[in-house]
Image (cartoon, rainbow, N blue to C red; front, top):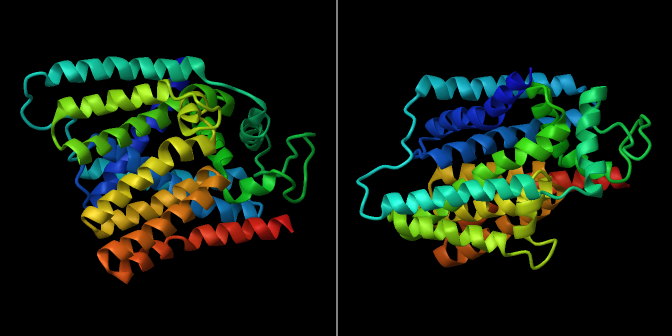
Length: 343
């Protein structure tokens, strides 16, 4: 049974996002790379989860309604990705002297980084809300309608639960747990950080291409530098490097370690190329950050607002500013919902 659970976990957290990303990139005619497929597969899943889950939470639907709707979306994305095939290769082009050595060293260090994140993660009082909410959703089939402090059923959202209505990351944990057969606690503390870290490395690798092109040696040096920056970046318990290393299962840590760097990356693409598909990817990334945490709602809006203003000035094109600012509309709606619930 354990082997089956592990297989389902690998399927849900790694294979499904990759296949979904292939369908997503094929639909938008985005040039494919393996890191890009995995990242935007997750983004396509998370953005859809955010769009459909918040209304379901507001109408107090059951968790099974979420499972059915999400699963249909995953089947559509993965089915389209399998149908289109045309999967990319990891390394394209002729290898130069030193490339294989650089790739080998980087690969070994990445495995060490994975091990450090797996063994060195930190658990604290936040588990009593984030993870407990996910476990309770699976147990009761209700969405944030149990007081995590007392275990009593409630009729409306109180206290910290009001944040989860518009940033239902715990529902994603519960969904992964339901599909794999593992408790959401096991998913959150064992498997999900490794899945998110895979996407984080993918973002770093795509950044390296923007800076160094196809030069594999310099790209590997860039990756190694970022790994050491995170390993020795424990200047504060609350900085992004620390969160990425020790608590990547939390939504706010995913915002810091993955969401914000990915938004910078896609915004760079928009500044350089300005394709319509890049705008769509950025909008979906913003929705994904909203799913992760209430901080993602605010930070996503601030980033889009600043990017839009700066790009509009430098490009001397107010339409770019308008496109960026229109992406903020969902953030404003989610914040208003949160404010009204708090009243």
